[in-house]
Length: 337
Image (cartoon, rainbow, N blue to C red; front, side, top):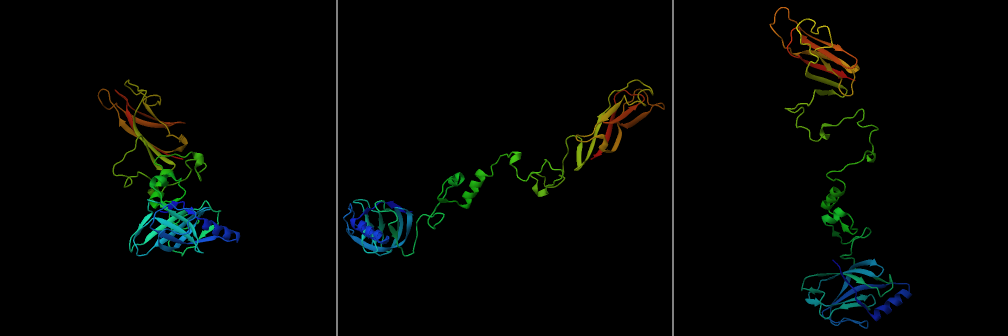
């Protein structure tokens, strides 16, 4: 990361910048001098107190009108504490100097390169009056959308928030951002916010591939399954209804007049399923489920089952000539639109 500090601009440096700008030019910073003596610099300074090494600027660029980023590498063999720094123009003038009586900036170990990066504030000089001339080496200036440089990686929390303008997002951060903002565990969309929807829902004809169905059994049909109620969907427009029902309006007296020719007694009504009418009935079958005799069963006993198609239902009549309880019937009906 860069070290941001505000050096003292020297009188000689101000004069050099003034002369350059009046000639339609910019003053060029080309070198950095490092020394090991701490002191309190003044504008009258023209050199470091005890210079140890002067090195060319590796790279640099302008961050704003009055702030410049500078990168340099001290690759010498000397070992010393860096306690004073000077920035020199291409004509040898000391433009700016920094030092502190007791606080060193860094330590240069023998035989170990020291990488220096500064954000140099030059608010005492006119905007755009100074530029950096480097060797084209290492560049540690902050990256922007228009410039290569160093960038900090956003944390997962910063990636989720999505508000920091100058940090890079990792793939993990991008996933966290997407999960947080676009793939919430539970959310709903109003019908008017859905693009490409059919005019009516469900559309008259649509299908889903087996792979698109969530929560499906591993095999179809599963080894063990049942249907609640008496409705089985055979095709998109075909239904089967079936069941076992008990008759109503029982005639309990013994004799042929016990309801054989009448549909008003001992009957069950079968209605079309929801959305269907009697015009959709294409097949019907009924059978005796149970009859209950009264007294002895002999050659004058009879049992019967008949069904009648009516305007809004199928009526099934089931009884025997001598009954002691209501009969039961089984039925199966096939409906198709």
